[in-house]
Length: 422
Ligand SMILES: Cc1ncc(COP(=O)(O)O)c(C=O)c1O
Image 1 (cartoon, rainbow, N blue to C red):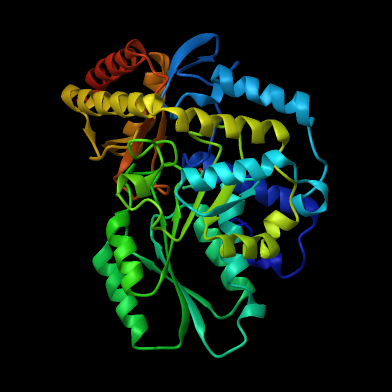
Image 2: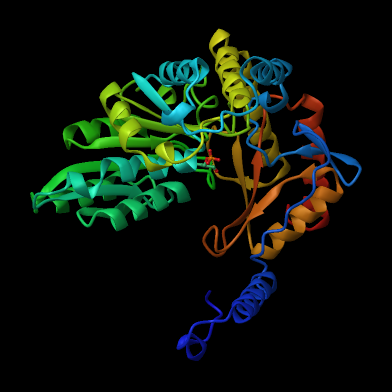
């Protein structure tokens, strides 16, 4: 608690002092506009949603393929309950493994081009699991270090995974490299070489970066990792089901499917949007993680209905690439049109479209105005992004109709002009 004065922590805080300090910090968050408010959505997630009795175009969800309420996915979840029950009341290794868990592991592994996979209850947990499982101190007896090179814009779960691994094992070190800057990464690796005391080198990157909508150059990173004898870890949460002609992720997009060492991802975005995560890689690595992952060992199995619905989501994607192609077409249309209206966006091909506005206040006012004009969109501003780089983040879905997109674009034009942004 940053608001607690040093003189008051010379003795232990009473619970009422603790709550008072929390109230002060919450007020400070509100005063600095850093407080996160939640808008109430009435009913289901979809290309449009009901907010306060009004149907508005949803441009803020990760429902990239519209599978969150696809009738076949919902039916599969219902079948999951009918055939396998609501819950298992267990972690996997006690009595929480059904054949559908193994089926989903096989399907997701082959979908992302890997030998084997292990489910976790979230990708956040999967990322924490990966780093802590393979960098455990009982595995580090000799006089050497492990080094993780991590992109500076990596997701919080990678950062926390690395932090946990570093706490658990003093031999684990990490160096952040500038975002998507291979030259900087190479320099850091070169520095490491002057000290040959490193056992394991890991390069860790998001496949797609959620604040920018750009993606890692996995062609270059796989070559670099090979040349430097490093293990390449990619969190493809925003890319599985999204990038590549068949939605197989950033490695398909970069033409290196099957060449990345470790891929993690989520079932909570394109692949149905409920929850669940996975780690995919070589069979021996996955078997090792199954023994060593604390989030896997000590947290409940994925519910049968989510498991069945996730299997269905992969089956839909594997049967044809229509949804992925529709998503790509919708994204290209929105990216082109929003620029034609006069907004500046970060370049790219991903359905995350960062609409750059500069000042925090501009982004806040525009997002409120857009909601009044029937568009639900979220803004990002300092400290989430650098000062002066406030933006709105649009997220396009295959389920958006032409008229949903046009309605949103018209609202952007109207609000942009009335606020003198364009
Ligand atoms: C890159 C990335 N990794 C991991 C996660 C966490 O995924 P989950 O919701 O499955 O924990 C997210 C979700 O925001 C993400 O964007």
